[in-house]
Length: 141
Image 1 (cartoon, rainbow, N blue to C red):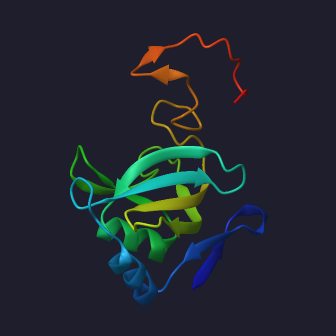
Image 2: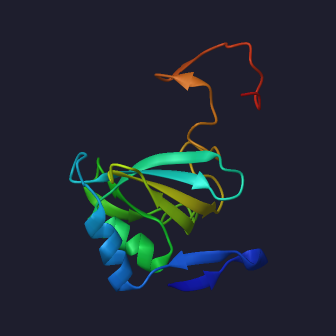
């Protein structure tokens, strides 16, 4: 395992190619385009930032570089989170779910995670893109 540092001494997780391959081969790529589900979580606040898909190549690139890569289901290509926005995600830690078909990525998020400009894709109270008046103020569970 090789680490690099972010501000305030935060360590980015980077595995050797051999260890990354072991992890990638242990997963069950059963979702669309032979992917696993990836849940990005802020490493410090524990807020869920976004959910995306990762194919084998995205898993290996993420684990070896420490920079989160995903598989775009719509564009059918690998993408580095932040490659156009500058809102990168650095891998701090990860977990594999009990079925091996999903990853929890604990990340250091630069800027906003959501393409709509919010910190998290789960910030707004929308269901099917319809705003609901729940009577709950922002910040309440």
